[in-house]
Structures are given as structure tokens and as C-alpha cells.
Image 1 (cartoon, rainbow, N blue to C red):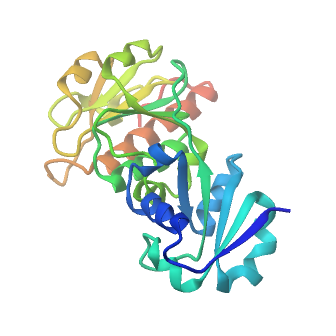
Image 2 (cartoon, rainbow, N blue to C red):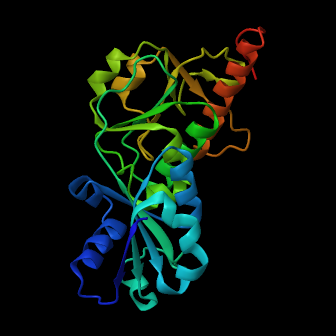
Length: 267
């Protein structure tokens, strides 16, 4: 049975470390730990094969939640309810969370459906793209230098559990993408062929760019295919997370049609 510790003092160093993890988006890289809060993310982590290094419960939740979650954890910490706001980043605290071990991944694969993030900086956008990638059959995400930290609390919450169904790689150099053994597709609001008219390859790699600047010119030049999403409403551009969802869904349709033997998909 997992060890149970009770913490009731805000001066406890462990509480201070937990606050850093919850509020400093890059603290997981120094501590080698990721903080996830809420039953949904805990369940997603377990479904993805992760074990809870430390289960953290508010004291008021001990009787109702301990039996369900403690067997999944190596250690359990019960925290006085008044201390939860010392570290939570949520306006409405979930009163349950966990620490997961984190190690930097390095060996990405060149031949599996891939999403490349080119300097995406908004945590909500990054998490949303991860969610779409997981939903539409992509396997790994390569985040180039300049992207928001993939395991920050805001990205985790926006991803809604997608992290645990993907292989995630940070700090990838743009030149490393030459090792991809897949067609590289890119979006461009000012050029490219209309997405709905294209027969999309599968598997493939999609690259989505900076919220204001889009995909870098260097990556656009390397792309096998550049596409644009038609916008009859006349807006200048789509939010990158919305554009990614449209493109990744189009690839999922292509994958299904190819599996059914009907060839590449025009939408």
C-alpha cells in the first residue's frame, strides 16, 4: 500500500515545489515532474500507461477518493484544504491531483503521422492542436524551439488528456526535419492550393506556424504541399488551432478512405 503523508503547513518545502510546478510553465524540466490536476487528467494519464508517482488529495476528499486512486500511486499526500490554494492554478480547484515523472524524449520516429509546431506560443492553441492530433490519428508532435512548453499546466489543461496518447518532443531544430520520411504539408493563408480540392497523402507530417507570422518561409520552402483553407466569410486568417483541426481532420478522412481502398481523399 502506498505511503500516506499529511501536510498542514504552508511553510513545507514540498508545497513550495508544488507551487512552482503549477505556476511556472517550464519548472517540470528542472524538477523532472509534471503536475496534473483533476480526475479527468489523472484518468487519462492512467489510460495512457502512466503511473502516479504521488497522489495529492485535499483532506476533505480523503474518505471519498482515497480507495479509488491510492492503488494507482507510489505515494499519497493528503493536504489540508486551506493549503490547496497555495499551489493550485485553477480558479475552481479540483482538490485532487498527481505528480508524474517526466524525462526529455529524444528519439522521434521519421515514419509515423506527425505534427510539427513552428513557434506556437499560446498555451491554449498548443493544447488544442495536441487534442486534435490525438483525435485524428497522429502519433507524435515535434515542437521546434520557440514553442510554449508542452507540459506546462495551461497546455495540459487545454490538451484534455491528449498528452498521454502522443509522443511529444521539445526543442527540435528545424534542420532535423530533413530526417522525416513523410510528405511535409504546410498551411499558408496567402498561397497554396485549396485544401478541399487536394488528395492528401497518408501518413504525412503537418506543420503549423506562429500565431502571427505563420509557418516560417524556410519550412514553407521545404514543404511537399502548401494548402490554404477557403474562407468564404472573408476573415483574414483562422486561429491556428482551428486551422489545425480542419487540416488534421482532412488527413483523417484521407486515411480512412485509403484504408477502404478508395484512394486519396478530396473533401
